[in-house]
Amino acid sequence: MKTQAAAQPTTSAPAGLMAQATLNRPRRTVQGLLQAGDITQEAADAAERWCRNYVFGYFDYLEHTTPAPQGQSVRHDAVSWQMVRAKAMARITAVRDALGLCAHQRLRMMLVDDLSFRAMGEALFPNISSSSAQRKIAAQCALVLEQLAALEATFRRAEQAKKAGRRKNARTEKEVLQG
View (tube, rainbow, N blue to C red):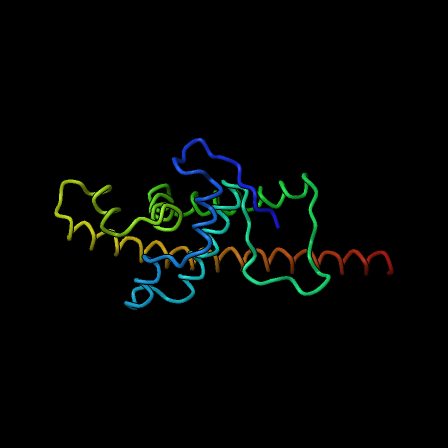
């Protein structure tokens, strides 16, 4: 398990400390939305996966949620580690491209920066009252998290269809070679 984080120039806190803190605590905003019934468990799980991909991709820190069974841990060399990290960045980029930069910003503020709805509201809506801004941003975040869950389901279906197509092509090639 890699625990050293590479510093990102856009962060103010040391990346390693920020990444460790991000992964080792429940997200207040997501838990609040989940407990209020504003999002589903699938949306909360999608938020957790997005955050893990973001921290791994940007900060080079990965923490496994469940320990690997005895003797089944995967060891990576420097190249394969960076390839896995690149895939995490590709997932973050795909979400940003699909949902847009505003959704990406809200996800980052909520999940990585761990801002409260009040702080996000004040930052994004400085010209309205704090309570109105808080309500608006909470609704926006709930919508973004549900969209994230739906997008992940779409990505999974596309990947399964791609794998099924490859298996079908392999069977066809085998039949042609045998026939």
